[in-house]
Image 1 (cartoon, rainbow, N blue to C red):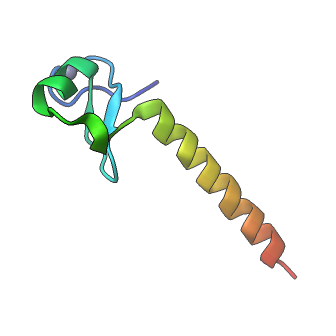
Image 2: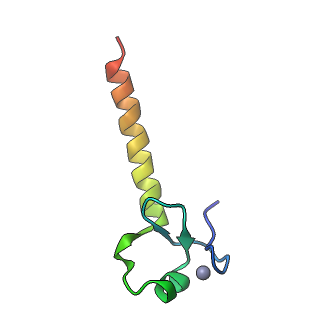
Length: 64
Ligand SMILES: [Zn+2]
């Protein structure tokens, strides 16, 4: 599992926020001097999990 770097095909480590553009550490460092708008793939996966969980809880609470 896991996403691949869109440049070299290595295992992706960073993703551009709000996109599906994934880069490995080396390519991310080559392409971007500032990594602050990049997010770790695993962090994004965690956030996504939290979002889904929250949504499910909200749906549950909204049920009559
Ligand atoms: Zn790469």
